[in-house]
Image 1 (cartoon, each protein chain N blue to C red):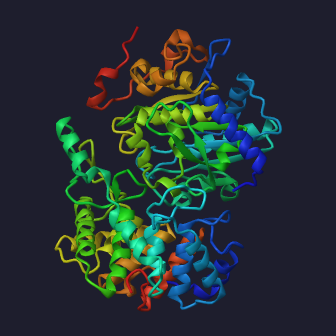
Image 2 (cartoon, rainbow over the protein chains, first blue to last red):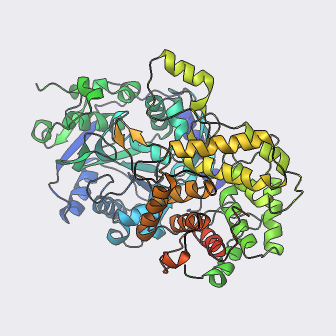
Image 3 (cartoon, rainbow over the protein chains, first blue to last red):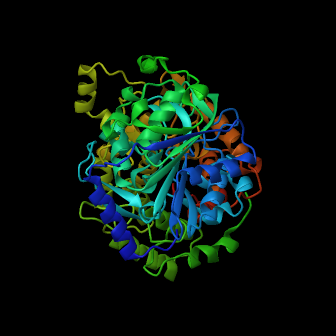
Length: 319
Length: 291
């Protein structure tokens, strides 16, 4: 775990607490970019640099934490965020002058995080991976009070690595989800909840209400950026047992609700049906008109992901 | 199994924090890695200064309700109490044991409670899992899962040497029935979900080893299939923790270590190293989770 001063931690936790109760009123529409990426190739390194440039991210001297989605490994299906995309993000943030870029994740099913990362190709793809990686399940923690929780939670113990970060970058895989309809930037934050305290799975979140818990975690982290691996996603019985589905796109932006809503539209899911997005919508980001979309046109990358029967009513009509 | 104790002994000792506990990968002391480090030391009869300092850290961590928190900053007793009990049971007469076992006996999964089952029935919510048997949760107020149930069964069984308290025996039996009910179709165990949305779920190495170890001595024909599943996992498992649990479980069910893989996987964490040592000792006839 990286060193973290008590002052820095308390300031981070206090900031997160304070912002939990604040409404978010950005002056302009949130910007979301769609970048074509047909395959996991070396081109991703240039693409990620362009994406960060488009969003004018200022991270010089700051501590950045990349939070990919590592769940389970199955060679037959793409469950996890591809390591090449994570490495491309790491290089891009480093090139922008970040003081430190760490990769951190706390899988919700498998305890052997490093073995999972190794199987998923992270050791082979990212030089010195073990040195720059933090297992959030086993990181030291502090309690964070949730001022206006959307779930039945009142507080959560959260890892120092993410509480002390200047920027948390959620890097989910674009997948359907058998409980939440879709798992994207916001749902990916489940991985910051420490299994070392709450167990595997993080069942306390399920009992508190999945949608509300997703919303609560989103409120804790006030400064985030999201980069969604939609190059090859997953449809059907996600997030583990679904089938590969290529969308050929990277979706990114500062506003997690807007990014997730845009991904839903790409997947053919009506974002206004997704409960956790509605809970966190502050300025109409679940509507297409509520987002300033740049890059590739959404209609050109939309590819309907197969939905489980329970979510058949979530299908987005084609305009 | 590759014998590694002399080479990891120093690394376990060196990883001990000044307060007497151990962290997962450095960092502050947590109950789980401290318990594994102490079980490893006990497995090789190393009860010197390092062990005593660990014991003192563990005893200081006992909470007013008799349980243990995952680390001192957490204000709740959780599943790690089972690990503390497993350590303390090597010290007959330890004052903390009765209240710790009492805390364990009071815990059960929320899904198996009468109120929850009645509520689910009223709401017409169908359960894909059998919720008739009471296991143990990771965290109070949540559902039962395989790992905390297996460790709690082991803790209560190990502590039951001196008597046959009927309440304790009933919970052990219920925990074992819970484990049998959560067996995956391949004969192994995952975290505790056999089906989701009608789809069968696969087992995983660590939980298969833990469940089988807790079921040592339990008579049921289906376990034969489980042992075959465990042997399959053992030959493909990448994790030292998984290999250690599987080997201890197979030994406890009378399988021969001659068929186990010989090479040691990377021992990346303190839990990896400690459990590997515990499994080595089990292969030589001393399993600290059972004896």
